[in-house]
Amino acid sequence: MNKATLRGVLALAFVALLGGCSGKASYQPAQQSGDAPPLPAARNFLVPPMQVPRYAGWKPGQTPTVAPGLKIEKIASGLKHPRQLYTLPNGDVLVVESNGPGAEPVTTPKQLIANKIKNLSGKGAKGGNRITLLRHNGNAAGEWEKHVFVEHLHSPFGVQLIGDTLYVANTDAIVKFPYVTGETRITTPAVEFTDLPATINHHWTKALAASPDGSKLYVGVGSNSNITENGLEQEYRRAVVLEVEVASAGSRIYASGIRNPTGLQFEPHTGKLWAIANERDEIGADLVPDYLTSVQPGGFYGWPYSYFGQHVDRRVMPQRPDLVAKAIKPDYALGSHVAALGLLFSDSNALPAKYHNGAFVSEHGSWDRSPLSGYAVVHVAFVEGKPVGTPEPVVAGFHSDDESQLYGAPVGLAQDKDGALLIADDVGDAVWRVTAAPPGTP
Amino acid sequence: MNTASHRSVLANAIFGLLNPLPFGFFAAALIFDILYARTAVVMWNKGAAWLIVFGLLLAVIPRFVNLAQVWITSRRLARPADRLDFWLNLLAIVAAIFNAFVHSRDAYAVVPTGVWLSVCTVILLSAGHVVMAVQPSAAKEFSHE
Image (cartoon, rainbow over all chains, first blue to last red; front, side, top):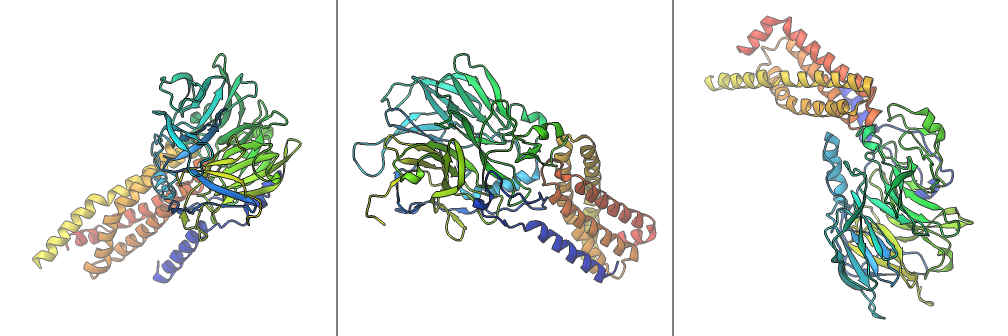
């Protein structure tokens, strides 16, 4: 082979390599929201689109930005990776400080590199494995009182009080504690209530919601892979919502095919269970939108075989046309790679009326997309128990305008006893509180 | 000239020791790729991904030794077979680099591209070995330079 030919081959190879690397998004997240998001054709990449802002944290006095008519304040700082919030009946707020157990073995060369890149954002920081209780001290402004409430947990995420029993979903089991109203520390040792799927824990969060009558717990269990690359046998009781009977601790698969159900809540008007879910990566910057959906008992929502109904994912072998045919299309797309990680239904609150009757969704933000998506708390309006319109940004400004630096990232949501929206920020290690701005302020 | 011949003996030793390894790794990767394509058992896929990466890492030193010998230190002694072997190896490495990226895809997205790239890598390296094997005199002179 002569040199000219070789140069030609190398040039072609280089162009092909670059072509494989590109893949900028062509949709805004809002354009891919709603019940019928446009879905481009799936692509395979040599290097999937990756853009990760570097960790910077919040400067003193710096806050996320809020939509007009709103006000934001920091009520807690210096936490250890706060992921989830839960308001107790007396107004105390529990902050679950947690991150993945870090037990997923490195079984591919790709993991070595991808994990390093993803962790540049600060999202991989070590969690506190504890719950901190925040108490609002009378009318005092500023940060709330902080009490270490429960320690020595194992990558906890969901937390739920039923009667006087506090259920905490560790990554490997639901444990329970007796709770006495007003106490600021639980010293009673945890009692295991029921175990949860815990091999690999590629997706480690176990979201928790109680049925309105308190007889059942619903557990969101994420898949053990992006798209079955760890083997189908690792997906037993994965990518499902489990229903656990509180009386017996017996459980069954309530719904399946939901790749990573990270937030579960009951819609207050219809009493139906809803979930937010993170969809699959690495087939394009605009695939696949994360979603908000009602969860039908026995329903199958596609993962891994298909997405948004019958869009087949050919990365899964063997294929299952029988299951693809059964796959339910999720109710409402939130945008691709936004990483929905917090869900809160709110009928009425201390925000302006347009934020009543709907769901707040916190979007932890993308890594598999350029430009970035998510990194915001949005509001999805509901009419007669169904989501309508496009997601309305409520809180943003978690990254710098040039997308190079990351100050914080929103995760768990809760409403405090005064109706304010609380947001856990696991990169900024803070808890934020959003209310209506006093009249007369810009 | 004593130091020069000394250096080339060392280079020949390193080359002789390391050069066979990438070929073995890439051939094993091809076998794993075919097994994965046929069975969809992910162990084979992950194994192939590691074999390709290690094959590439192990190829770095012998390829640079070969580059230097064919084009610099022994330029006048290098036969057409040596040059052809160099280019075949270079193309094989390029194919293997692409293949490492293809093998970073999840699950069955590696098939069929990954299998074909493994086939290309192994055929190119095999051709290089055959070219050198049927030119024994060139190889001999080369190592006794």
